[in-house]
Image (tube, rainbow, N blue to C red; front, side, top):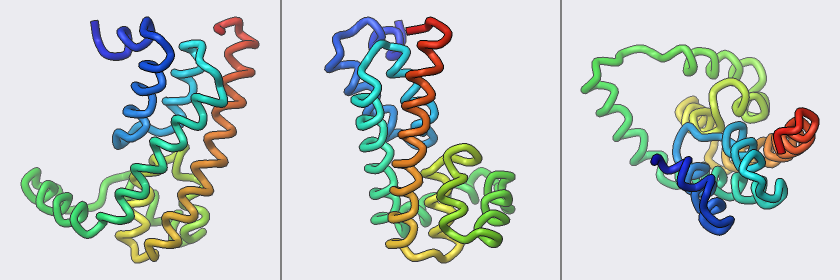
Length: 160
């Protein structure tokens, strides 16, 4: 039995803990966490708050420890032989150049992920304060959108 199967059958405290840990994990955005928690039958507001706080913690940690993360990432890319930007990095750079940090932050959850966008925005030269502020705003907006859509969408299809 894997973690998700176990959590689905556990009591709600454990379910919220698993959702929080998944939200803190890199590459796990509210677009995944919120629908999962709502499908488990948890309170949509509780799920939204849990996912928001978990993702926000990751953004804050990336913002505070960006230099250390960047050095580790550079070494890792060199070991793997990655020399150029990835497709997500190229797409993010175009968005950042055209719309700035607000555009990248607001489009990030549906295009590349909030955590990846935060790292890239810092790499592109945006200030830590602006990145954390805009990513927090974007995360709040998208958490609300995914919570409402999950709640009404799943109930419309009788999945909850």
